[in-house]
Image: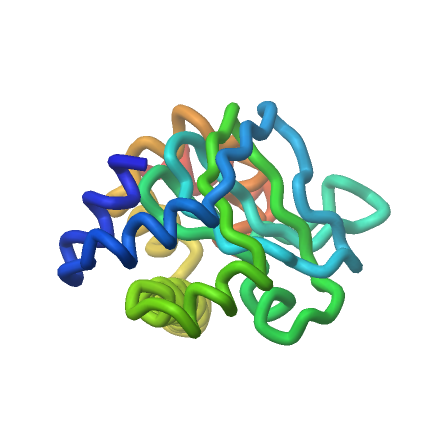
Length: 189
């Protein structure tokens, strides 16, 4: 709980009453390594704060080699299939832990109660929406404006720890190239 408190304290002052009400709604979830914890066509019922671990967002395909990875989330970040969470309609993608992952989660219903009762709920909703929008926007701009090699270099300049925890097949999908093309890029770099 200290991590999420420190994260939120960076952006706002939270009253003790709001904090206590908010944490009473949080649930700690331990997700084993390589577990899909939101399946395609399930309704996302949580916004979660990652205490530890790495999560991949992806679109599954019949052939696992053709899966499309479009996002990663790390320690001290929020994660959700946010479009499904907001609309309460089935998700078009999945969430998978790439490492053993610990989440602090709040349900849709509980967050609605936090929104009505406190100021912190609106803050969390806004921060999550802003973060997810910025990630999506940055990824789209990178795909449109950068070469595959530039996307690879930028990814590892910004997140050098990726090589240690994320399989190369997910990285190649994320930057929009085949595994063979990524291999050639890595040899040049």
